[in-house]
Length: 124
Image 1 (cartoon, rainbow, N blue to C red):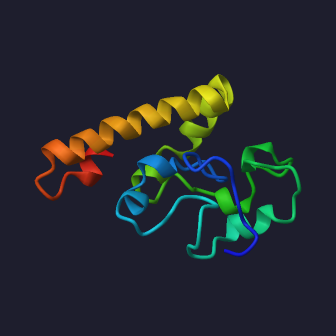
Image 2 (cartoon, rainbow, N blue to C red):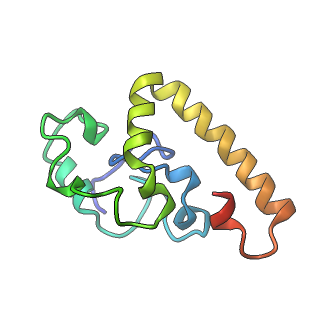
């Protein structure tokens, strides 16, 4: 999406763990605010709010876009969205991002050495 850039490619604007996402691992998405990818209504919304790096920093959070976000989607990163947002807020961006980088290293090791072709979702 044009004009949408972010510094943290591991934790998205909306609270998804981009580093551990199957879409990113499969090369279908570069991560939140990194390169060209599909249009996102939450990313579009964020362009109206200067200085907000994460949705939870907005006075309107959680808004209608988050209604039942973690209840009905079977996509792994969506299932833990609010739990991950809370953890991110508790331990801070640096610690959380470093933790995600370590998890990504472990995930890549598992996929390179123990993947029989269908373990990506299981390991992630």
